[in-house]
Image (tube, rainbow, N blue to C red; front, side, top):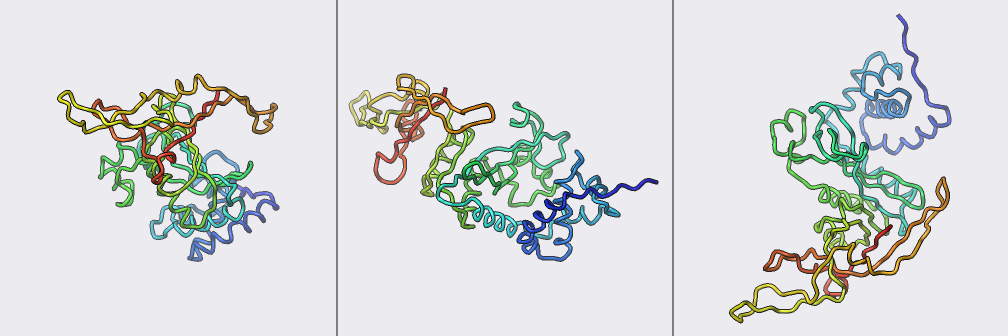
Length: 330
């Protein structure tokens, strides 16, 4: 019977990996975890397409896979200390006022229906709706150096609406409640801020920027941010004012009326001057595009009598702080 040889990492990479893992191993606590954690990481980084426990244990040259499986599946330890160490290490490497925190989705295509959170939903990895898991990811970046600092699983309604399914899969009670991806992202931002992570701005695509609760949440936390919105997002001119209105009987109406009607962000920018900007060199030459920018107020406030949205309130007490700069690339 032929035995498989353990697949080792190059010596220089292995030494760097051991040094990088040391503060994380200190946070794991028990001796067995300190032993199995480096092996599991090496299994993930090593060769071979299958990254499940048994094939990795074979490639690592372990006599069996029970210990490695217990290390991964045991619910007896808390991963919060590891996340704190990751935030500290990331801040030491790239944190600062000129760093940005990028919020995005990560889709993992999956077959079957037993993996926690798997369901038909949009998967960026394949560019369409597919059977997958979706995770909210946060990355700290400065210049061209990105460091992942957060990754939380999103549970769709197919899971949160079925308590027995969650219980069978081992989902903790506290995580079985429905929670939107923007809400998960805000909770992760709070965790990272509490851990001392330093960044100057939060960036997000339209999947998060189109959420009024996400934008307001960033404002309430006093964070600078730039986020995408759909081209159909209704916006008001920065000069819009709310005027009192009257009912047909002449009495004051409950809802005010904007001095100018809202329109889509795309339509608002059509008449603006466009400038071509280049931000860096890529593998095939300079990366550039044409941009236009305009200060607006997003129409995400309370609904008026005809169910349309009034201009948003914005941050603080100064109405001008409600303005937002809408940029478009083409």
